[in-house]
Length: 68
Image 1 (tube, one colour):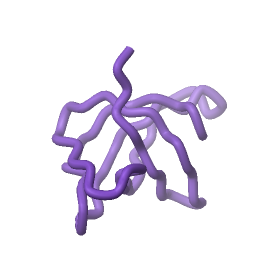
Image 2 (image 1 turned 90 degrees about the vertical axis):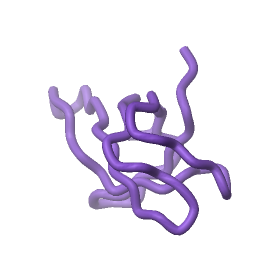
Image 3 (image 1 turned 30 degrees about the horizontal axis):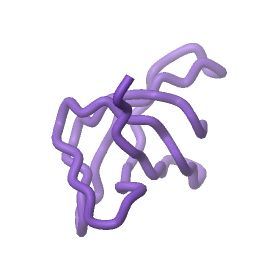
């Protein structure tokens, strides 16, 4: 999961449980995960491209913006 990319579908930010869609090549598809910002205080609006930096099974990820 770490290093997988996706897009924010529900605002991720301080005090919020956001949602992201992540492309998971091992499962050959895209899946929804609950998401928190990897950097404290960071706000990621809907549509922001992200990369997964931490995964907590079964459905929680910590994400950072992906610029490339």
